[in-house]
Amino acid sequence: MNAPFAALRMAEVSSYQESGALPAIDAALFEGAPRRGAILVVEDRDDVRQGLAQLLELHGYLVFDAADGTHALEYLRSDPGSIALILLDLLLPEPMSGRDLRGHQLSDPQTAGIPTVIISACEPDLRGRAQLRPEAWLEKPFRFEVLLKVVKRYVTPERGGLIDS
Image (tube, rainbow, N blue to C red; front, side):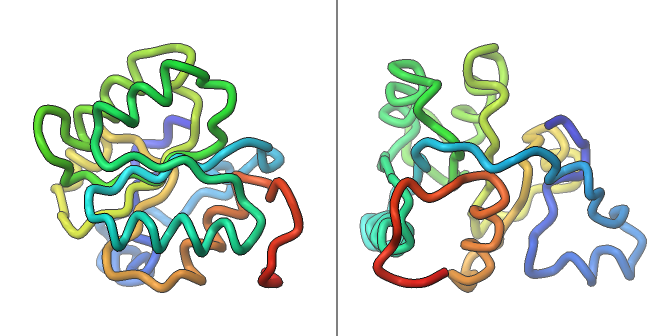
């Protein structure tokens, strides 16, 4: 999807809308059936990455994880059809930031269509957000329930989870 203002922080959507800075969420952003496949969690902090992966797995999702942009790009290039969603932190260690990884993803026709949710503590300006073109934006810290609601829009669990969603 290529909606210029899809990069809304889900937890603060109403405050942006009230200020007039961004339009209301377009229902077209979430059209189409959820996909089958893995969720690629790209996060440099081990505790956050492992925690997200475990919680998603408990809900029945298949999860791959990468601690940096280089490894995430290897996953994407090796089997792009197996990835249904990317959860991407922007602040990753050198040599490849989350912004760089997103640029590589968008420039490759095989990976450009994979939905991406930015999960980050950094807050780029509106133009920077528009250039990243994510399907959603979650500002850290966020509640797992909010993330799970977004994930369900894009990905079908691979199996019954140990926790009812």
